Length: 92
Image (cartoon, rainbow, N blue to C red; front, top):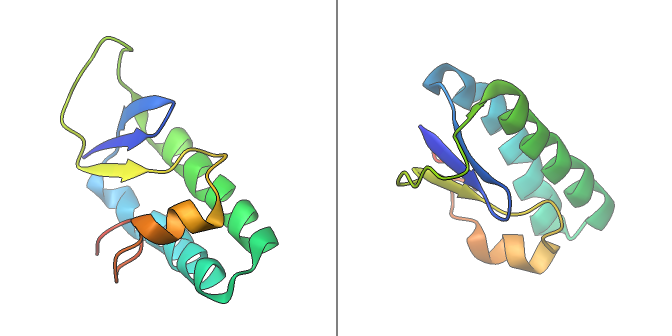
């Protein structure tokens, strides 16, 4: 799966890592729903760090269709709330 982190670029992420990231996605969704800014920023950072750690960066000049788009690290709680689906940011 190709994942784009807004403002950073794209990585290729093996599907085996999705369940690990879904745990953080669930925590992020809880933080957004409760309005807990501290938990939101901590969990968003952990989720993005996980994608960076587990994914393989694509070259800067690569323009592949992204299967998943994640917010930038400095996104606000309100911005992420608008991006959430009933599954969170990561489907599944």
